Length: 383
Image (cartoon, rainbow, N blue to C red):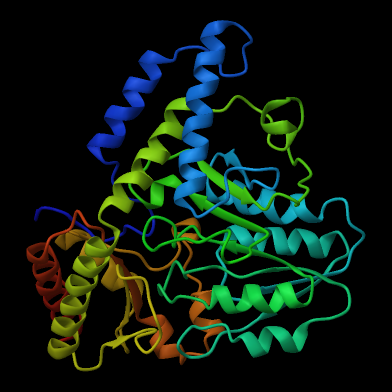
């Protein structure tokens, strides 16, 4: 069997050895519970708070002064989205919540829960390029619109949303704005404070950090009701003992990204673009979803009309190319992608779509070999 070429980095990225080393050192150096009052616990607490401030700073938060932003650790992106959405609205009387139909399941789930609690939820669609239009959002606002949540970058298409423009729109209406930056953070510069966001969600394993830790970044004046109970940690907003090694790993992973952010993005984008060109030349019917819109440098959603995506996915797995038919949180589902449906794509395009996502650990040689294997698998299935 051919050596595996891993092109599913939007699902999760390999842990950097430097991150693993930093986590091991933290686990051995700071064995105490950060909530303990003795000196060992206080030492661990200082290390935890240093990691918290490092992460917040790298995400563009304000970390000093009376109006400093707050970073709350969670178990990952799904919990971060749930805590942000449900926590911000838990104490309010039901009103209007606006999101998009292209959001990740971890955001659409809380939206459905709000509906169950009596909230009116509007899910705006995207255009054929996968972009949520600012005008479409403005058109659905009501007097009781309390919160808007639009992702920064789509997990399936990589298409970037106009976060700064949406935030400005919401600020002008005194509406809170949250963004799910799970795919954005650690791939593109994040400017939480400058964007005037109320809240932002992210998770470490999307940028070569550890699994099991994410975060909600909150503006200084935002109240957050807990969704878990029984502890005092993190001002009781998210009780439970924080993992110092995971927090350190998250910070180190972000730091390594920042060191070469621009060159890394350019290198990955060149590799991704060449990969797409080779496939579209060899398979003229192939189409790149979202090609006309700004995209993450690493993400390629390719559709092969007339092809059953599940059959091609399985053939590629056998050929040694790891990719995806959509969100990892919806893996195993044979249903058409809700994201591509919300973009209004034709059914034959949706049925033949696969996602390939690169990281800086991939090489141009791997990208070319992956393209060759995809072309061969396509020929074998549809000659």
